[in-house]
Image 1 (cartoon, rainbow, N blue to C red):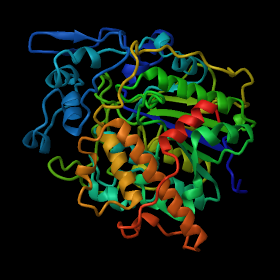
Image 2 (cartoon, one colour):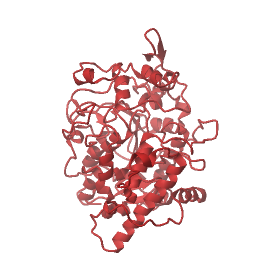
Image 3 (cartoon, rainbow, N blue to C red):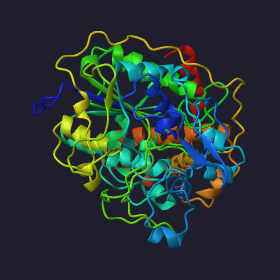
Image 4 (cartoon, rainbow, N blue to C red):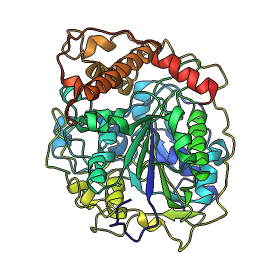
Length: 512
């Protein structure tokens, strides 16, 4: 730890970003156990047609299929009218949050019942315990009103570099913006990324450099051990299982993955952190990347939000990044937090500042006294170090959390399912890492008709080849700034002795 540490007791910030759920959907009914939370009462509703409304309920469980959450879908959900170029370019609409049900019904009849339901607190017992024992932020918005990848880019860099959807060119090149990982390193601190499938943080080009390859750790092999040994770095990012097989279920909460698996995952992380000798120096942040098409009653700010870098998004939307996305769940965990804390909007640094994904690099900068902001967005975003509202760490934090409630009644069988858009992007990313991005089947044909099990095998082998190539480059004295996947794509293919999927399964089976 550098000598220029600040007055904050936190020396390790741990970040977990789950997938595609809104605040009201996951935490809205927590208002029943803490009235200070801006949640739901059941009086909330949406029009399902010109003559009928559907009220919000608490019957959510296993969710299938996946609701709409594209830029267009989110626009309709927020403003209550379908997106079109003419109205969006000069619209003076106010966000009504009245379009969720109608947009869902336009995808599939009956889907309104899915998006207009949330979980009872007892259905998500891990979150119920954390909300009661630590802090919930009820005004945390996704950074952009769109899909997963742009919002995940904001989390560690304060910008999506103009992306409002998948951009294959940028996927190949890697997003070039500076990240909080580099800022942490420049400040003399350490970071680590604990992954289960090939990590999405490799969408950032700079993280593909040889100098950072030792920062990536296999979660099942290393996370608990590093917790036990007190060796967690200062900035920890945990990535989940984005794919689902019969033996290894997805735990990222992306529909149709069973949310109880995500609850198990959060429980596992918390209990490892709680047992660590570093516990009294940890702040654990749990958020979701975007709302996934699920209803939320709080309108996102659409004025007073600065563009991170004045990059305008591509046609047809030409989004200026001057408004936020839908509110998402945010839970903050630390022994320095009083039980039952509710964090509402921030008190600055600007009159219009809000909590959103760029609040993470902004807060990390503040806690570790780093030199500079990444963009105009994280310079504007609210910081949440104020949640550390005690003068001494608690000694009564629960050692373990409740067992999750299984949502899915039938056995999972998604190995032959089509890939979600984000899963396709992860496959394409791994094709880049493997050096296949100049082949004629990249990017679309490589994922065309690919099923989940095929994707698991492919990304595992591709990522292993990337790691092996990095090891070879290091042994051969390559410069630490070298990126091996920039090499010519037609390299001889080497067999991988054991598939990534089998390695993963063996790790889980033996409990390593």
